[in-house]
Length: 160
Image 1 (cartoon, helix red, strand yellow):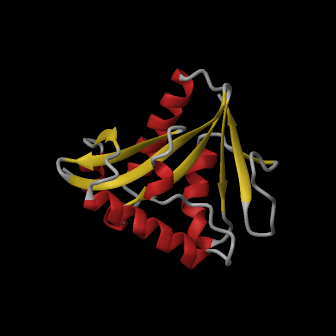
Image 2 (image 1 turned 30 degrees about the vertical axis):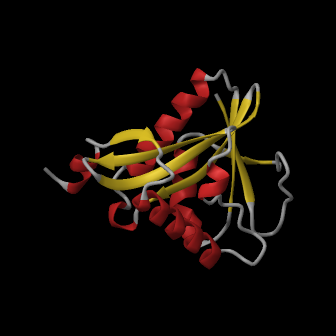
Image 3 (image 1 turned 135 degrees about the vertical axis):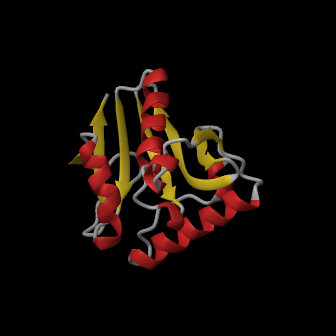
């Protein structure tokens, strides 16, 4: 079985924000965002923020190996926001992000959302994620929520 085929057998669980492996992946995510973004331009969420009642946090696993994480934030009755999408470095380009995105979009549809949005950065570090979002039909658009537009960030939206 190839590495790519093996990743397809992953399971998605409600994220345990007390699990040291999950906390480590979130630290990796935040470090990556800060390392690839100008000061003041990181809106990634840490564990404390992901505990908010308006956020559903999920993790991807193969057996007991953590592969990635993602969250869906409730914005209003018809829209949600993707947050904290991260694939563990050892599992990049193996379909983990695709499976997590599928799960978040399924959750959004089950909630009756008509639109899902996200804020992300620009530059080489963000291109793989942007390519994934665009394959799903996300399009660049206006800022939403409390976000302010800068030369660095961009806003993507998907009508469901």
